[in-house]
Length: 531
Image: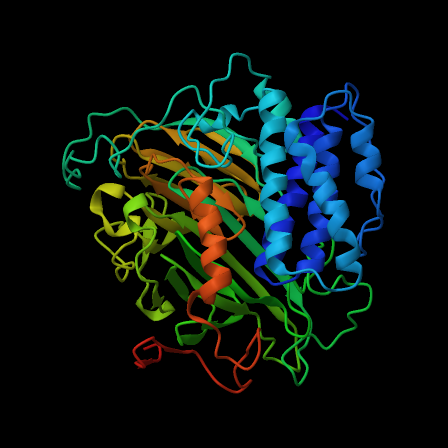
């Protein structure tokens, strides 16, 4: 075990603690923050241990275990006082008398410890290019000076994103410096070189890394069994950690659901979710009163803005056969000036999303589904009005691409500064810019010229995400994405005080009647069905 890996493990626990806090699971949040602090402290030892003894997962941690670990450190940081606060709160957790605010305060204190340890160890993330931070050195600070850096290879091996301690403050006027450049016309002669590959990396796991302006892409693929009368799985749930069932080693997961799989009531602020459903159904409900059921081929685009609560449940409608589910949920950042706008909910129905069929000289076919952006003159319905994607200079594109074996497809050039990534997620691989890319790999592309893609030995599918960076500092804790840690603290305080509009639904994870089809009811009461 090295310091990077120990700090990475601590970050994972703290991320889970922050998420559980927003699901009002305070005992679980307490458990996760306790384990997270232990691994963060472990990173400070000259020789970090391969394991830390803090108690059994799923139960309250062992009282005294953190204090024992802290006492063995020769020079603990001043932020380590969070250990004594955690130990003091332990009896109240046992008696179920601790408040959500007490747990929330401890989680923020634990993040301060995490960031301070990252700074002491001089751990940074070279991949962020001094432009986008996921964790600040201290609340409200944009950056701090780093005089020495550990190698990026160790960071990649750690498998986590660490505090970005940039060498200078990032200034921004809320748009890229090149925003004034006109978008090229489709028939304009392309004098730029063909695009080239910058990097190819694996995308194993549920969460795929992205580049600014995207925050990440979650790929959910579950082979759910037949449904029961409650629209949950007609199968035993024994052995599952209900409420936080994310075991990727199983064929399907309950996630935060207990009867129906999915994500019950939880808040968002400061970014957008673009949910692209390939197979299966989702039931949506939110704190503004909007609701929907949407399924295969549909897209929901939700601007959280200043704050919204919503539930995303996966009803298993078929009681006679399996209920497979596959979707992408893409998190797209908002500019600083748009982070506190009113929430906005819209549906892009499958029937209205354009699909472009491109045929090469040999008659082989590539099919592009255009969720955002344009291709061949085809554009989907407009994104929400305050989305970064609503600005033409953002050059945002979200495309699903299906490739027959051997088909040759040329993707158009992009605007200067646009970042483009392709995620190969089905088949036996494809060729990009002349290089073979195996399945479950991400291709990062540089240069603004055209991009040559060729189908592999079998049918393949690729997700394309592209956009010009917003280029502002990013502070993220759980479901809140702002520009500073002070704004994150304010988001949690606002949520505790206002609940972002409250929750009028009878259940935290409401689902609709099993016989009901696809529909949406908007905030103003407008009823909508596809077609």
